[in-house]
Image (tube, rainbow, N blue to C red; front, side):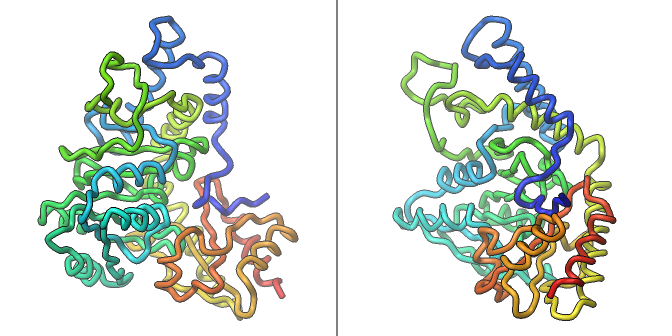
Length: 379
């Protein structure tokens, strides 16, 4: 199989990740923070080691601000539902995933409103002005994707964050598609909240995510329960990470995530970004010369794009194209709306969706050339 669906989840996983997950089931199956026996203590150390690895990758100076969740969706829900109160207002972009859109739609029941800022892919100044015009006196949060999971369009998130702070509004970065692929320096760029998927560009297992905190304003907890701390108190602890980590942690996921992060750190974010961008540019240059293929963005550039490319073929459904690639060539891509109807409405692809290609650091130039060959022979 040629796997090009890494925006959904990365594959293959590094051998070190697989081994760490297996090892955790054999040697670190105790509940950390709940017991004083050796296995519990050793498991707690593994959890702390992963927090430190996260801090190293994202430039965070406090391990307690690294919160483990079940995924990026969980992290985003924690921020959105934990910050916004009745009659508050939120600003998002026109490229947001349903992990942002649906929580906000649900909060309409509590009279929370939101505005959608238009993104101008070739004009960051106009994008910034669009966000500025959406802010009002009730705006309490700005949530923005780092890069579109459908079209790879990269937003000027550093500037949007600075804009938010100029109005004393906290900023939440959806890094589902960018963590492990694009540089993220939380201390330098002062993001208040960063939400990450552990199973995509960080190469961890499914079922693990991160919420990274960099603000004195903390969201309310999404769930409450046992934390192993202050057990005599019926109220949830108000300190991190316990405030957000009720219940038993996903230890296999955390152990695997640590090894995935180490792989990314050792390889180097810039190296990964350049490699994947080179492959997407190769694909783009070839597809634009194939009759019937429709592309929706300018050629991907490092400072403007994440390594994700969507296309369609005139007269063909995106699902049929993906099925053809899988059945005849063993090439795995994704077709449809990619859980991002806002992005498809913005690009006028809502009726048919798109075929999405997303490489990883393991994808080769030969893999992309085989995809190009397959598309040329599609009829």
